[in-house]
Image 1 (cartoon, rainbow, N blue to C red):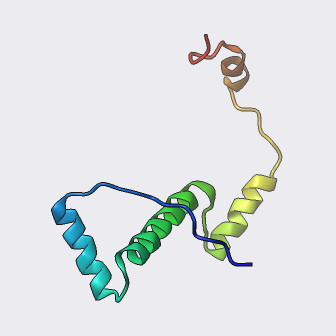
Image 2 (cartoon, rainbow, N blue to C red):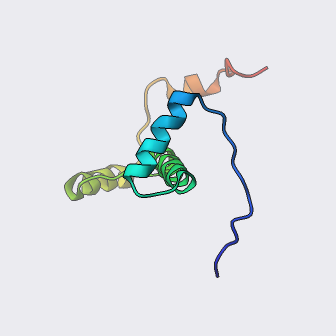
Length: 90
């Protein structure tokens, strides 16, 4: 099912910024809207990926899972620290 492109995004730019985007779009054989949309979507995906997932080589992944699976340890002072009121509370 194809989605209808019925929403708009508007931005204000300086003349040098517009010329830069026009030049890049032209070199990429795209219209400005297509170029700007692709660049914006790529940037959005990168920002979200940095916040939602990470990648490890296989050996490091195995070590990471091993650490997650080990039994919990009592850390000195943690219970005391957790029992104090939050400095961010009211």
